[in-house]
Length: 253
Ligand code: BT5
Image (cartoon, rainbow, N blue to C red; front, top):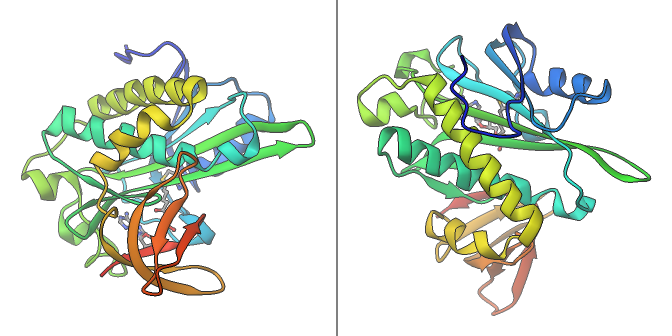
């Protein structure tokens, strides 16, 4: 048995030995009507992807490569916060299974020091009636040794095994991520980000720090003062102006 402690998430689990990307499979299943809580997990992704079609290194059998289909009744502008909600769930799950304290770099990275152990990719299927499905992609580096990473990420990536010095049970970690994700997404859908904001900030590697925010059209430097109830990063530049950042790559200075 799967050992799941959830009501909705994981009600259907599609386990694949290999696929191009669990995001692609999940999009397909969602289009075919897969229910809220459907989870796609693969042992190996040949075309794992990050934001803006960047490559996600997905070594065989050593990480958690999964996508979760949600069908929440929320307006499209509430979709990006699911990334923040998922980040809190993953940090708590990692803490519960390994005792390790990871930190969150807004919006979608989970770090140990300045090395990335997890990336989150939230994508939408929507039409004129609103959100049809949210596909939350989660990639956690679990049992990689340093030489298992692609040359491109070797210097910037880490795994739970590298951090703790021990192999970590992937199945238990998946169960725990889904358990927290169910609790926190329900909280978010019912009550908004307010109750989760403090929890998020408590795990944040970004807040109060000097950062550089690279956006498509400009780059801003300043102090990350906080996030709003909508998950927008508040960046104070040297001229005293407060900027709301909706989407960016953040570099901690
Ligand atoms: C992300 O994008 O961090 C989102 C990653 C989501 C991956 C999951 S795995 C399951 C599901 N199926 C998919 O195909 N994707 C999702 P972004 O913030 O754009 O970061 C991408 C960058 O992270 C790359 O350009 C690399 O610099 C770095 N990177 C790539 N693979 C990595 C890895 N395994 N560990 C750490 N960093 C990595």
